[in-house]
Image 1: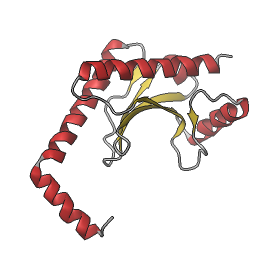
Image 2: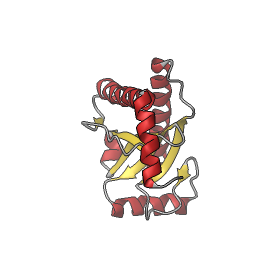
Image 3: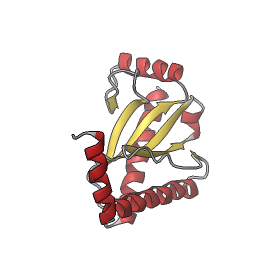
Image 4: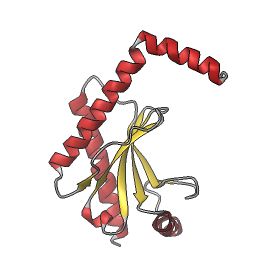
Length: 163
């Protein structure tokens, strides 16, 4: 990677071409539409009022079923820009709750999903890639895949927690 000045020169060239700007705008519109889709289809779940656009590293919104929300947990639906994957994360309302659930899952040996190696420096407890290398040519199918992966993740987490 070059110096800040070199990176900014390259950034300017790429922005002048227009492709990066158009792609990013399209991605943000899709994720906003995805949030609205979840909000409309699952009115009994809490869906955040907006998306977090990130710093071209990750973009996400929360989608919380009541059983997880009642445990001070939340599900985040992420697009990770570097890996180009859609992921779902189990997170908590604060670091204390995060550490409590992280320890419980670690000590149980449950390994259905990727447990973050340490809660320090992480916002997640669990991570799961639900769509690798998404096809943005068929947004309806992409939405169905994200929905299916998210709902399965939630079901599995809720089943684990209710044991």
